[in-house]
Image (cartoon, rainbow, N blue to C red):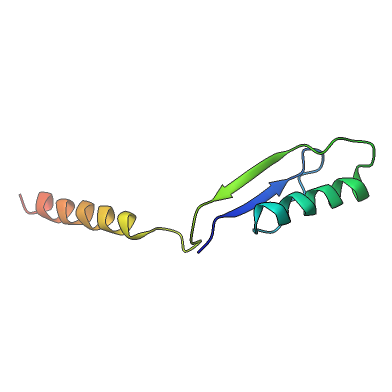
Length: 76
């Protein structure tokens, strides 16, 4: 899955939906024009790489190792 961006307004906390960088920029420019005219767009950008499925396979492997170590430690 592609990288996603979400923009947050620096004036009121409004957030754009996750999407492409250009979609987020356009949505934020439109928001500022409607809600905060005469104010330069500001705020912050959130970046999400790849899939939004949460914990990736690396996280699951690490979690499995921790559980295994806890089981071994509890037997001694």
